[in-house]
Image 1 (spheres, helix red, strand yellow):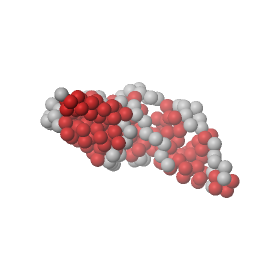
Image 2: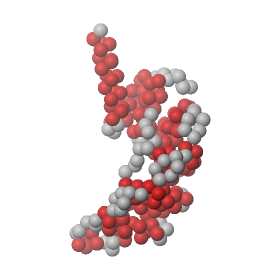
Image 3: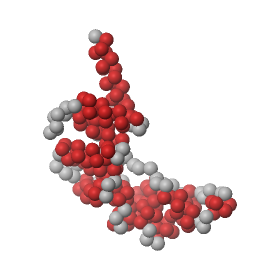
Image 4: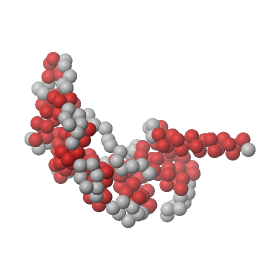
Length: 215
């Protein structure tokens, strides 16, 4: 299964806040703001209480963009946005608790925040929940629930969930039958999105099938 620690990319809302807070400087002077100016602009919006800006500020702290990397600050700002109901921030917060970055590792709290985000349809959170149930981290191990969450995320195009579904179907024996065809189908979907492990598995499957056909 894929590690919970996988991070998401910075959302395009960053550009919106750069333009808003810097007074359309980019368009007037045709000079892109520096990472430090971006950070200041988004921080100003975040301090005003905007949940999206709070989430984006947390991402900047988490990645050390325009400021020193600071997981404690990242956690604080993700939590501000998450408590306002921002699903993406809730998912990020769950990931921090699962990885232990900036906070004490706590799978129970990770599950709590992933569940809130997943209930709002966040695909990453749904995928993370599937992984928690598959590994039994913070919850009782339950492959049926793992599959249900992986399916929800995979249906939205989450490559990690697609790969994990392929793994479950390839293994079988977890409350549902082994199904090589379904396994390949999900591996192919994940591989098409550049998922390295799914691509590796497909290569192995193809090599094995080619070897059998030669015999």
